[in-house]
Amino acid sequence: MTITKTISVVASCARIFATVCIFIYHGLGQLGLNNHGLDFIAILIFCFLSGYLHYGNEVQPLEWFYKRVFSIMLPYWFVIVPAVTINRMVLYKGTSVVEDLITVFGGNLFLKNPVYVIGWYITFILILYLILFAILLLKRNKILQFMTFIFCIFYFGIKFNMLLYCVSFIFGYILTQLFPLSKKELSENGYIGKLLFALQSRCYAFFLIHGGVLIFLTHYSKFNSVNFFLVGAVVSCIGAEILYRVTKPLIPKAVNTALNLKTMLLRSIA
Image 1 (cartoon, helix red, strand yellow):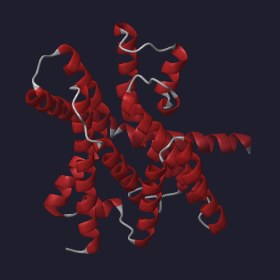
Image 2 (spheres, one colour; image 1 turned 180 degrees about the vertical axis):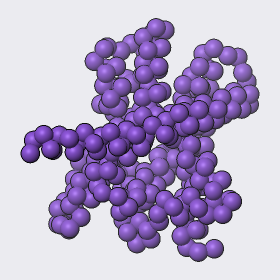
Image 3 (cartoon, one colour; image 1 turned 90 degrees about the vertical axis):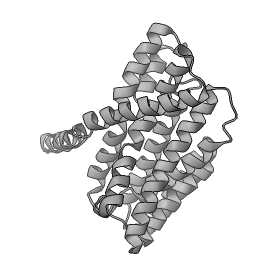
Image 4 (cartoon, helix red, strand yellow; image 1 turned 90 degrees about the horizontal axis):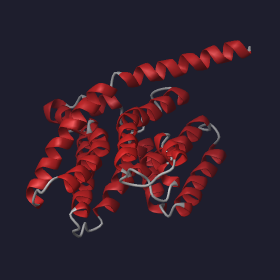
């Protein structure tokens, strides 16, 4: 097996492993059991893979940024809008209209008591992608690129007490410069590779879905711990598959629309 194929398999396995860790972590938390800090390990892996598998060299920086933003926000909106609406109805958490708007637009990290706890990661990764977008724009200027790295690490890492997460993301980005891996190589890697890629492609949808499923099962069911995890996993997988299939075709359409609007705006100004 070549180095790139090995890396692609390891990357897919790592994302699947991290997703399972997050699921177990939140499941144990809902049951009031010790979750052993599994979230720390999982988020480190997510941040590293987000930096390593950013594919920023394959397209223009603006197109890349639109793809990243819509890949994150479109599935997120499909989950968070119903979540915010239901929260308003059942009063699971008391929030203001302003807080709900901040939540919908992905600003969970700036809220003290967000409706959807895992939403903080959405804000965090969007900030990191925004910084990486600036790095891609400044690629020819090594000094400014270095300053952007420092800003990312020390400002966001220290401000939000997530320095190691930032370091993990940037380490992934640096590593991809040494061992570049294209999305095509990741997805076309034999039967096992294709299966792993298909599973890891749905990890983000699972990440978004599982929290609400676990909360629902905790408050409206009487499962024991084993059944709780089994039912939670099955329902989350089904929901993730539906979310993935619904949003996947919408993402390139949203990117093209954004690029066309940008072109129209520039023409109108000219």
